[in-house]
Image 1 (tube, rainbow, N blue to C red):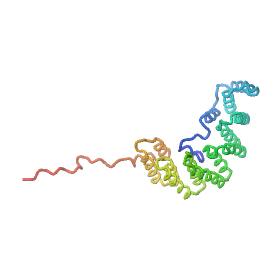
Image 2 (cartoon, rainbow, N blue to C red):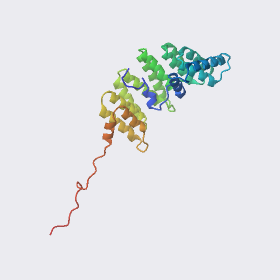
Image 3 (cartoon, helix red, strand yellow):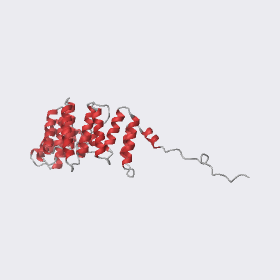
Image 4 (cartoon, helix red, strand yellow):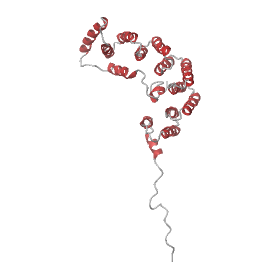
Length: 279
């Protein structure tokens, strides 16, 4: 994996529409799982016992099930959390995010085959679901199956590109290019970034992705030039993400230096008006 602090393959979704990998609610559960929900662990366990009983009787509401999942995560009981989440996903097949959460939880428990099984259910229903493609590619990459991941994303990208109404072609294309880059195929990734920029001339995301690759290659000046090109796409609509990216790369001083305008002409330097003719 690269040394970049971003999550593997996150560029394709996070920089684009910032499509959440697991949806906001799941992120909330994960953060709650990393800190106590109440001052006392004993209190958590009491709540867990009560809600377990409600679930067993089939009387637990959706909110109670979500609360119980929070408690399991807070108590670091991943086995119980997985069982509950599987039940919730089966009961609410329309909530695809539950299945994605389950896949991520299985991955977290070192069960890649189980995680893939869950993701495949999502892709069977909607082959271009970007979050499912992202997680599947990550799972395959982590298992040394990079070629398989690339084939998956290539097929999805080609299909989305053929469908004019598809809004996912760019997102999938960026995922594919990022994967190619991580597999050392920088020439192919660069070509795809350029194609995406040409196909989506008003969107700064392909330029951002290409700038990131240049920065990782140590080509800071080219990265800055690409950021400036992205900024100029919509000069009347400032995008703070561009400055955030530059700052995150430690390029802020250089970014500012590029924005310094040419020195203003001072009165002393200004050309003098021709004086009156001499005597």
